[in-house]
Image 1 (spheres, rainbow, N blue to C red):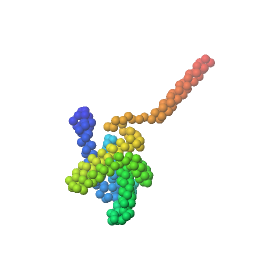
Image 2: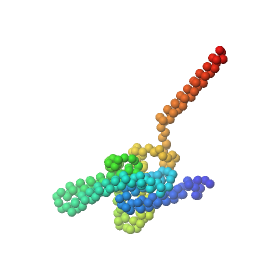
Image 3: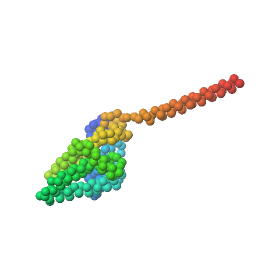
Image 4: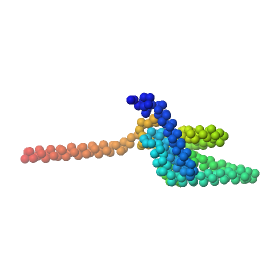
Length: 261
C-alpha cells in the first residue's frame, strides 16, 4: 500500500489530522501541568520543546516527550517562573501605587517608570521560556538573553504581546472563548508561536538549519556538511593505502633479492 494513499502516513489530510491531534494532546497536558501554578515555568518549557519536536517530525510519543522535558526543565523552569512572577508583582505594585497617587505631581514620572518596567518584563517574558526549552544556560544568562533578544526583534515581540493581549481580552468578555481556548486554542496558538520562534532563531543564526537532528523534513533547506571533518579521514585513509603499497613493494624487493642470490 502506498504511503500516499487514503490512509497512508504521507497523505496530506492524514498528516493534518495527526498534527491537530498532537496540538490538542499537548495543549491538554500543558493545562493540567499548569494547575499547581508554581509548575507553569516547567510546563511552558515542556510545551515548547514537545511542540518543536512534533513540528520537526521526530520519533517518539508525545506523552513521553512532554514529561521527559517537563522533568528536565522542572528546576530551572520553576525558578525562572518564580523570578518572573516576582518581577511581575513588582510591576503590578508600581502601577497600583500610580493609580492611588494619580493626583500627585510626581504621578506622570511614576507612570513612565511603571510603563517602562512593565514593558521590559513583557519583552523578557516573551522569550525566556523558549530560550530555556531550546538552549542550555544559567538562569541569569537566560533572562538577560531573553531581554536582549526581545529588544533586538521588537516587531516580533510586540506581535506576540498583542496576540496574548487580544486572547486575554476575548477570554475576559466571553466564556465561550475560554471554553474554545481550553479545548482547542491552547495547542493551536502554541504551535503557531513555536513555529515562528524557530524561524526567528534560525534567522538570527542561533540554531543551524538542520540542527543536527533531521533531514528531508517539511522545511525546505539544504543539509550542510562539514567537509573539514571528512577530508582528514580521506587523507588518512589514503595515507594508510600508500603505506600498505610501500610495504608490499618492500616485500617484493626482498623476495627478488633472495631469488637472485
